Length: 101
Length: 151
Ligand SMILES: Nc1ncnc2c1ncn2[C@@H]1O[C@H](COP(=O)(O)OP(=O)(O)OP(=O)(O)O)[C@@H](O)[C@H]1O
Ligand SMILES: [Mg+2]
Image 1 (cartoon, rainbow over the protein chains, first blue to last red):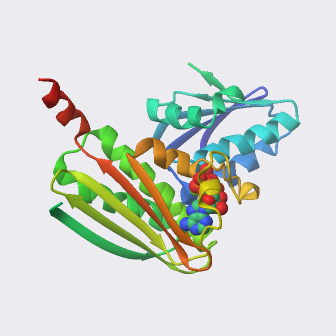
Image 2: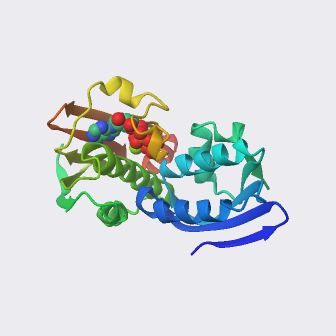
Image 3: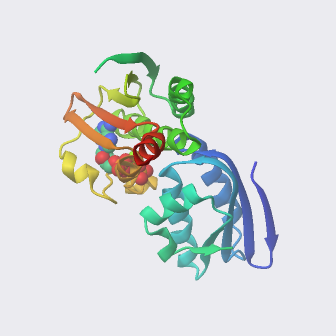
């Protein structure tokens, strides 16, 4: 179960634990459920609780970016650890996804 | 080079074993007192290679993944991640950043790039139809030897 907060068109989701190919599958399904609400235009992924992450998370973020971009929305990430930044930067993710303080 | 420790582990190609493989490799290097950074580097690279064996090598069909880790006297860690799956046609192409054969599954094609950036050496041996071995090498305690050399 993801913990999240909806405010106007903004959906903030707090990811936690280890993000790998196996653990991301249910997270993706739940995120997409939440994004079914057409009022949601902006997705903020709060990464503070993420204790491990590999390249699977890049695909997750890019996938949600594509879905939201189609409806004129956006994705941003916040509270990323230096390691998370390093992996996201390798993929040039911050060219399409805003990193919020 | 003399071997300090060695281990082999075979496990089914199932998603849940990605985290298991990370735990096992952590336990294997922990007696060396690696930095948290080194530990995370090794865990991430092993996670990438094991995930690749499961999702590409066996394409989510049943199979066995083998983890073979060796710790040498000079604290160099070598990990082989071995599958007997589909194999890779063009290894150089597979290692190119953003190259993926699984874009529809939201793979980003960054796994090899992540392995390369977190380990000192990454080599790949593969035969189409036979399987793939990814060899990951990292010299642990790099910072310690570095500062000792400077002193
Ligand atoms: N063990 C393997 N067996 C067969 N093919 C592999 C194996 N490992 C990698 N490949 C091939 O190499 C490509 C690149 O691998 P890489 O890990 O860099 O990216 P990815 O797995 O496609 O995406 P990501 O790791 O970013 O989620 C894969 O798409 C796949 O075609
Ligand atoms: Mg991969």
